[in-house]
Structures are given as C-alpha cells and as structure tokens.
Image 1 (cartoon, helix red, strand yellow):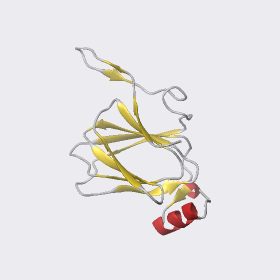
Image 2 (cartoon, helix red, strand yellow):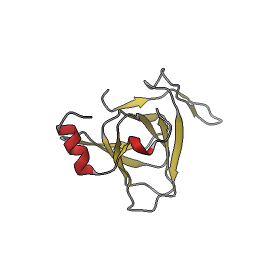
Image 3 (cartoon, one colour):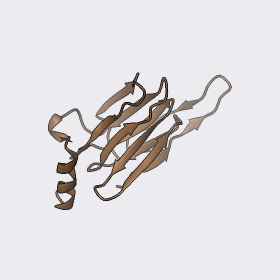
Image 4 (cartoon, one colour):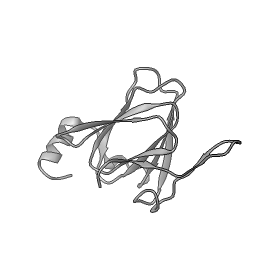
Length: 135
C-alpha cells in the first residue's frame, strides 16, 4: 500500500494509440467513482486533503502536473505527463496537485463514492491523526 507509478498497457498504432485500466488487474481496488480536472488556471493547486478510506489512481490524460503526497513525515512529488502512467495513491495520505500545464486533463479513479465525511481538510489535524496512529 505504498504510492507508486503504475505503467498501464499501451497499444501503439499508426491510427492512434490506446491505453486502458482495469480494476483489480492494474489497480488494487474496485472503481466506484471517476472524475476529471480540467481548465485549471496557472498557479492553482487542487486537492489539499487526505482520505480516511478512499484510494485513487491519478492519470494525466493530457498535459502534465505534479502530485505531492505527504505521509505526515515525508513528502514526495510525482510528475505525471504520460497517459499510460497512473499514480496509485493509497488511503491516509495528504495529496495536492499543482503545476498544471496549459490544457492539462487529470483523470481520477476512486475506490469510494463521494462521501464528504471521508475527507480530512485540515493539514494540522491530518498530521496529528498520523502521529496518533489513527490513520
């Protein structure tokens, strides 16, 4: 359950390339929700929260952006810029998305349906929960 870049299948064809993702084959969860981020203005940051239960796979379908993951002690930045790479984000990590290029498109596959109570929005609360072993 560590964050990691997952290389997705890709089929190269002169007519255009194809990639895909399958639940339990490429990612360790059932897909319950799919959403995408687009038209993010330059300099803006998305995310800025953690989840109690939700896991995600984040894919840069177009353009590029950075995903900052924080476990309360260590921060890692992942640069996504290929549509055949996905970043697996396990539950219990703080995540932020930034440095969106022009016309970037981020696809997010989630293991849970939207549930506001699954979100941890305050960073200081997140760090305390991690220190106390509650997440």
